[in-house]
Amino acid sequence: MKMGERGAGCAMMCARMSIDDEIAAICSRAKEASRRLAYASSEKRQAVLLVLAKELRARTPEVLVANALDVAAAKERGLSAAMIDRLALTAVGIEAIAKGVEEIALLPDPVGEVVSDVRRPNGLRVRRVRVPLGVIAMVYESRPNVTIDAAALCLRVGDAAVLRGGSEARNSNLAFAKLIASALSKEALPIDAIQLVTTPDRDAIRALVQQVGTVDLAIPRGGEALVRFVTEHARVPVVQHYKGVCHTYIDGGVSAVVARDIVINAKLSRPAVCNALECLLVDAKVAEEVLPVIAEALARGGCEIRGCERTCELVPSARRALDSDYGTEFLDRVLAVRVVDGIDAAIDHVARFGSGHTEAILTSDEAHAERWRREVDAACVMVNASTRFHDGGELGLGAEIGIATSRLHWRGPMGAESLTTFKWVVDGTGQTRI
Image (cartoon, rainbow, N blue to C red; front, side):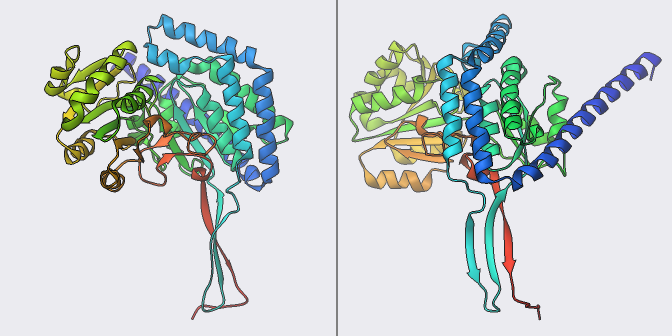
């Protein structure tokens, strides 16, 4: 190795050591804070969230100024409209975030819940009791509201969190982190309970998800590349929040108008979110009736249709789909469409191209609805409803830290309960084991 190369290698090694040391110190402080949080009363954890909601309202202008810097930088960098939509905050949006924090505060506290309580033949009383999970490493992109949602959910159940948001939302995340620290301080809870990793170096993510002994769970929420990076490098347990390739299958017996309204809501209400519709499947028996009606409404909404041969025959304006369009998360005003021969073909298509997020059927046939519920494998299956309802708030969780598409230890919206674990509590009267 030449002298210059040796020097560069040493510099890289020192930089990595510095990042590793920095992340290790952050996580160590979080672990210590999690011990204090675990002993805090439910009322105390509730109070800090109510204070946080007040801070959000009182300092909305400060947050909007920080967010405007991020949005301007994103536009200058040429980020997509979908990415900017995820990034942008408004006063109305911050009020919604504050209300979400209040809803989390008022949720029943799962900590201390007795999951099971049995008396053994030898007289031992054996209980399983919910307890805080510990330290959550949250890695996410774009949406600065995740900073508040993740912090609020973790605080409600006594977890500490180390948050690493995307560099595109750096100023917004810093502004939110200040409000969280202020709320914790006002309620005399450790400010290290919620910490934000500010370094843009991707190596910080690698270091964060390798903190065995201090980090109890890693949650990646973002694009496919981010989730794969975390999964491949993690040495701690990971709950994956993978892409949302969501389908709706129009089976029949539902009017074209009802089908149109559900599809338009699922696709166009917010195209850039993970529960937005990405592929429409239509039974060949009803395609001629419903597809033109839906296509016209999609066109009015500026949505491009990429369809199979039969779709293009019924919708001349549609672009012929490539094989790669099926299974793609567009996050934009683009919809893949395929005409299929019955429910078996629809279920097979979902099994091949779905990402395990949200799958819906529109039908009046209860037997078909039950087959969909039973045979389709996804975090959420829906009958006669928009995929957009697969959301923590809509399903009664108050808010979510994300929607998990993996199977362990959680699936679907991750609310307060998902951020707990349990311990066995055994009470005896002097028993010894034979």
